[in-house]
Image (cartoon, rainbow, N blue to C red; front, top):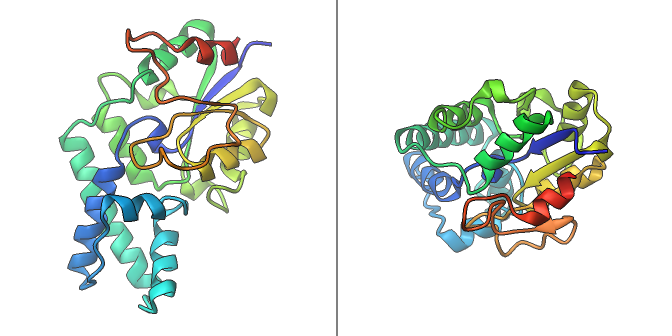
Length: 231
């Protein structure tokens, strides 16, 4: 049976925003009076842990900073505000092949899902920035952190999306960009094409069914290996 649903996972599978997020964290932490300043290498390591609040809590525990839950939530909220503003202002572009894969889904009747465990403002910013090429209405289901009990790598987000779509896991294909997110899809029984981003390229994506730099070839057509997974 042809693939019935194409499920874009983390926002990094759609747009490249890791460095925007990193710089926003640094500003938010400085405003909160913290001396932490994450360079690209440090932030790449932190991305092994899914979830921004979880990263802050993990670092607080490791350094003995003793940040309260309220402080962590406030830093994360400020980071989100800063990052979303830049994402929209710069009209961050879609990653290569995303528009083509959305077009494929429309042409062949596959349902689209956006299966994240990020918070709603991040999703809103992505749609606002890419509105000329991607609309929320393109997606039959959009999942955020508010919809599930556990974030990735738990399979909750994918299980929720599949239930909403009424589709069995074996009839879906996920597009993901981090090891934790790949694990989430695989735990839900969904095949995965991984397209790591600028700060996740060194992660071990061994669970993915296919790992590519981009979904599209340099001439702007979908990679034949992606098409093979869709057929």
